[in-house]
Amino acid sequence: MNRPRRLAVALAAALSLVTPLHAQVNLPALGDAVSQDLDVNDERRFGDQIMRQIRIDPDYLDDPLLLEYVQALWAPLVASGKALGQIGDDTDGRFAWETFLVRDRSVNAFALPGGFVGVHLGLIAMTGAPDELASVLAHELSHVTQRHIARRLAGDSRNSLLATAGLIAGLLAASRAGNGNAVQAVIVGSQAAAAAASLSFSRDMEREADRVGFNVMTHAGYAPSGMVSMFERMEQAYHLMDSGAYPYLRSHPLTSERIGEARSRLGTAALVRPSGLAEHALMAARARVLMDQRAEILAQQQAQDAGTRGNAYEQIGARYASALASIKLRNWPRAETALRSAEQLLELIGNDARARRALVLLRAELALAQEQSGAGFAALAPLEQDRSRPLQLLRAQLALYDAQPEVARQMAETLQTRVSLVPSDATAWGLLAQLWQKLGQPLRAVRALGETRAAVGDLNGAIDRLRSGLNQSRGRDADQIEAAVIDARLRSLVYERRQLLAELYPRGAPPGAELPQLQGQPLTPRLSVSPRSGTDAR
Image (cartoon, rainbow, N blue to C red):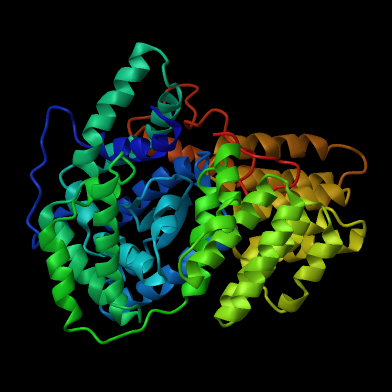
């Protein structure tokens, strides 16, 4: 099995395992009582278990800028769902309502139990406007709000659902085996065959998600034409080159009836002119580069700016892609030329503020890749008041290469405040660990490393690191206050692991049982720009 498909297969397998092989689940009608669906609390817990494994998979990508962009499209949809009554009190506070990125070239998005929605970079890359991407997000949101996943899983015991989530790690590990032993091949193959049945929604569910999603996106202020143009774009591309790159159309069959109904809704919707096209062109270009970082593919992206024709948005996207690919290839002159060309073109387009910000961040990324912290901070000077996550994390990376300890200390304090407010931010914890190490604070560094592992769901790794920190704290000069913090956190994580084991083994965990974990997992979530990293062969 090729690498870009492994995560999708594992997710599908997780859901397919819920139903015993000898049984068939008859789906309830859409109007059936919610009492027959999967319990809201258990659905969220099941989703959390799945996300534990996704967050430590190498294809899970935390690119702060691209994630911020997707979340900015997603947030108005969630707010719209609440305003329209699609998100009720039972799910509002219990579900995550969280999007995440999957570094995969295929055009796909998927909803998971508990309000998690995954977006492949291939989907972002092929969209031409924010409204098109928002239409897909609205559709997936509607699968969650209408409890389609719960209905799909209706009839299964809650304990089996929780136990199923724990098997995902094994499936992911087996899928990495490629041509491994026959047992692994049989497991992966059988689950892949069952995947379509588990993740595919019924025709009525698809139509309902279209209808509800359309209302949600238009109420949120997106152009109603976005759903139609997205349907047409996918249909045309699918017929021209179906090489398996459009799994979204397999789990969400795109029929002529669905396209026709989407077009008919345009007549009843208010006319909204698409906006944000310049920023979207840059983010789509960013997705194109990040989704495949093999050297030969980056070289193709680098050369795009030379012969790209089309409208101004396509051209600025090509120049952005060329600059980012050049950074990955460490071709600094080419990156500078492409970036300057993009900046000049943006002035002709209209100097959109959000697009300008994206180019400023790219210039700082160029400085970071060259380990020139001064140039990076100078590039970010126009955004001095910007306290967003992408800016904070980029400044923290630059601080690692600054000769002034005070700069690193200031950024460490900034990130410490951030993780106290958002303790699930694994990337911030990872950078904080590096900053504390640079500042000669080993106990704080090891605690941050432990929190990094905890944030991505690797409780085993988190406990190991905190125990290591506790051993270090026995020295004469150790910070005893920090040691007490580590001890308290270690006890908390041990208790949390015990609770998870109880969920995975409802009849009692066998002696020596451990939480499943992946092999070869990265120490910290992968950032899009990392000095000295070179290219990532895939």
